Length: 185
Image (cartoon, one colour):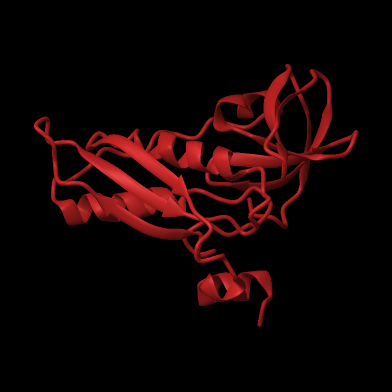
């Protein structure tokens, strides 16, 4: 389901959510009517009958009648290149909750570097990213989402995500596909 597919649901229990774009945590009460605005990358963006925009994380999707996404498949190989590719795949699974384009295509990821394997053979992923606007309250939420997803990869011992604002993001940083999808041509 992308941003154009809309459906409604009634919450079957109280749901932990994040207020968009402020990043504040809140709870959506049991029995609240929600409209699903975007379902991408395992998270869902909804609006409620009372207004406002909220992000719902995967562990709460059952409360709006959706299945919790399956964990990513295990690795096939141990090379740095295949791990780097899988790290980029994880980054592509993360979305700004207001924009139906992943953070890589949006041009929000400035760098992705892997430290050499430690004694246990695992590596540290170092990510530098930015936000579409410096005042966006979702920065910590997106960084935590990326860290959590990357640390689920068995070869990653730690994921360090740094939000930077130099250089400032602009629309020219988006991929051509993202610009086309968002109608920026």
